[in-house]
Length: 438
Image (cartoon, rainbow, N blue to C red; front, side):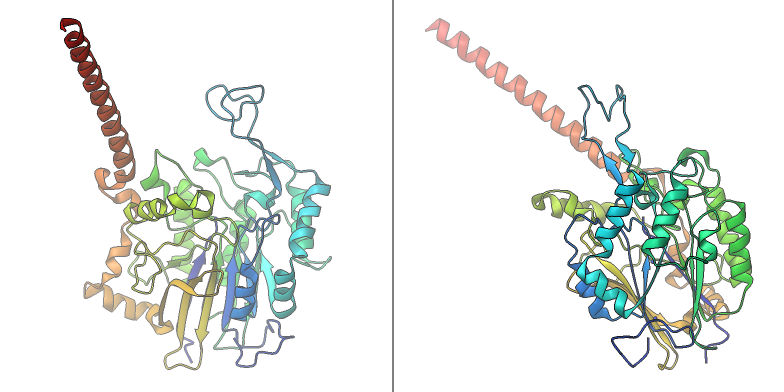
């Protein structure tokens, strides 16, 4: 038994099984968990074919990681006119919340999807939220509808009426699965209810949730601990895509992220770059909403090129990836498999497409997460060292490569257009003079 090993995985937006596969099986706290699926960003008004693939994976547990429905509303993109939603003359916000009745209706639409209903029959469904099901794009503690939104989310998740989640401020929760020696703990964070404004470097979790998280990490031992966050924890995409665009992540709150790493390091003997062992940050986004689907198909190869050119120090590259960049911008879900019977036990982390096919992943023995062995690997100069530099530590030219390429391309095109215009005018002038002379 791998009782001396304690692994930690982080599942951001923005995150196991019995040999028996009974159709009525749900995650029994006393049964060994070996298959977990997770996902996020599911627009209730869009087709959701991905559920067939999720059900085909046959998970015992499914984790919602946020944007479980799109509960807010979006005005058109307008620079001019009566309602200006973007630009220097903006006079109304682009996003605005729904009424309680409308948000409830959207949850009912999501719950009635046949594929999702089939999943609920076979697996235990747990989850947290992100901004769009919280009630408003990019919202934090200032959002006035959060109490109502919390109640509706917990109704959607079939949370018991006497659950402590209905009494606390926020939807954070933890679950323990499996017998001793094969225990898996899932900790779900709430990164909305207590979060300060994005530019503040303030709080993400709030003091009550920090105290709860410390108790959870101090609690009964588990062989694997999974922390689910609705925003990315380690990855800092904004550091390499700014000033073109910025995304929400823990990196926008560096003091809070450092506090999380210190807590993990001191309570689980693990830290991403602290000479302990690798900390995996797995993003599945989304079940229906995805980067490539937001642009015409002719531009999708360009999106893949951008992903390849985006500087990264932390991305795990593998020959098993669908694309060379080892990112996947189409609808997908995440899958975790644990083979407790292997010697030593193995864990596999994957992203899968709507057909259930793997588009990227990594597999390793759980013993690799033993701190003493990780120390030995680091001293030998193992490639884990590559994952110890954060995006903000990259050289300035490398970190801003995307912006420089874009602005450079625009500058070249502008110069080319100007030169073409000058050439055309010169040619026209010569032609006019020649015509007059004749």
